[in-house]
Picture 1: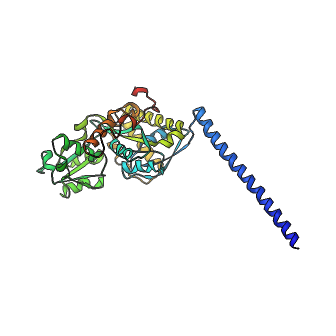
Picture 2 (picture 1 turned 180 degrees about the horizontal axis):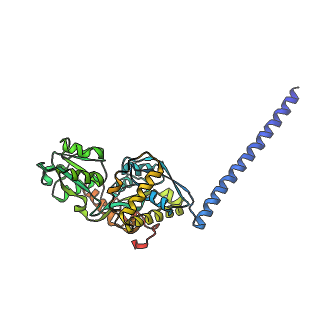
Picture 3 (picture 1 turned 120 degrees about the horizontal axis):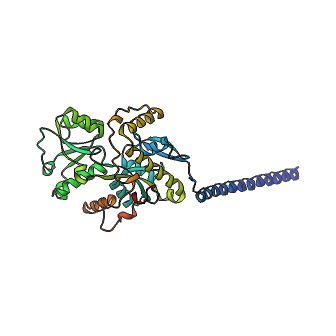
Amino acid sequence: MMFLLARQKKRIRRIWGAIGIALCLLFTALLSGCAGSSAGAAASGQPEKLELRYQGSVGNVTFPELAEDLGYLAPIKLKWIGNTISGPQDIQTAATGDVDFGGAFNGAIVKLIAAKAPITAVIGYYGVDQHTYSGFFVTEDSPIKSPKDLIGKKVGMNTLGAHHESMLKEYLHRNGLTNEEIKQVTLVVVPPVNTEQSLRQKQIDVAVLGGILRDKALERGGIRPLFTDYDLFGEFTAGSYVLTNKFIKQYPNTAKKFVEATGKAIEWARTNPPDVVKARFEKIIKERGRNEDASNVPYWKSTGVAGKGGWIAEKEFGVWVDWLVKDGQLKEGQLKAAELYTNRFSAYPDGK
């Protein structure tokens, strides 16, 4: 009896051993097939990855979303996983791999790369021109007339460490305030929809307003601009989409397709009449079914992007590297602007 049990146990072990070997061989074959498929896609120029996870923006249409709707992104599809709360949050999410791409103010990208995040800017997606800009507004009766008057005052903006904070500090630096004086200007995070009300109720002294919120506030009257980011820099691309270096290495054709498609969408929006663009945005918002208010779409005026198809100019990063050095947040020579971005995937060689 014991002999039979021993033989049976040996037989069972042999069976399970054979099953284990078979599973290992199958798993190896699958991995080889995936690697071969990926290598084959890379060699053929086809996108290696056909789904890109991203964060959207409530009531707004991003250029990658427009690219997908126009058919430029096919066969790649976008997978919306939620809405971002700010540019710095969006690129941090991209850096950790929770999304495949994210976008933010170029100065925020510089700071994240300085913190050793393995990301690279690949295309500009928002900026400033005479139609699309943010202003720093005070009430008509405000005693604030000059940069020095901001010492000891509160400035409300949507997030810290991004576009608006850098614009404010650049304005103060240009007008001779010392770092110690600038530290006495208090920055307050206020949700954009509450910023105008906070200003009028004297909860803050200065409000940063852009787009529909700026236009509606000006229609109501009683406020005046202290300065705007357009006053400071004129036309410039202010923010870029980033990909991780690992993503670029692993999926170079997908990266190229993403950048080319997004760039073509930017040019479509730039070259079509605003009413055509706004109608397309409204269609996209309606069809994606996220229960959103699209009332800000009629206020869209321009892309604000300076470079053709989102082409990135070195100065659009260099100015923020220099500013962060001047502000004491970077060491001299710590970062080189040309190493923070790439235009090699652009559909518009040399930005033309």
